[in-house]
Amino acid sequence: MFNKVIMLGRVTQDLELKTTQSGVAVLSFSIAVDRRFQTKGEEKKSDFFNCVAWRQEAEFISRYWTKGRPILVEGELQNRSYVDKNGATRYITEIIVDRASFTGDKKPEGGGGGYRPDTGYPEPPPASSGYGSNSAPSSPNGGYTADDFKNPPAGSGKGDIGDYPF
Image 1 (cartoon, rainbow, N blue to C red):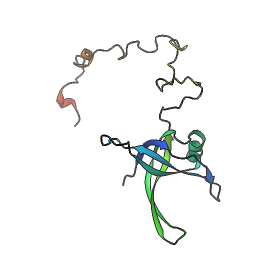
Image 2: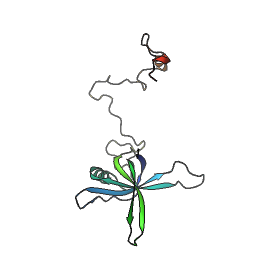
Image 3: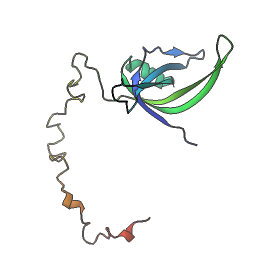
Image 4: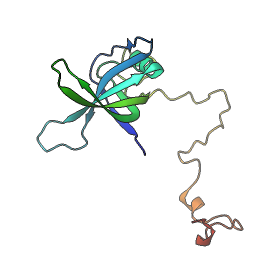
């Protein structure tokens, strides 16, 4: 079976890394994920998902993310139940985070680190990187045109539908 979840959202609370009795780091948090569509005239809606990260991933997330910061989480959905203080059985669905990634959306903090707040992208590298100025083509498509891909080279045996293995 296949159980894979990829979510892009924002951290909803300040994070608190905890440790189990056996010394394993664990981090429980939630993310808000905006819905793709909204009804005209209505406010944008979000869905909230509970997440749990363990060990190094928990430490990594707690170190680099704060409330409101965008995060991409990958993991699997898992259901569990517990008995609350009143004796009622509660059910919860969580994303068990295998991996967290930065999204490129960084809040400007003093403008350091080569971050350009107007675009959200880092500064481009200098024109000469020390590895030679001809290391990459200067045109955006590598110097090729659409005509270069229309016909295969003569004698290559490519291009006939019978050459494909499917």
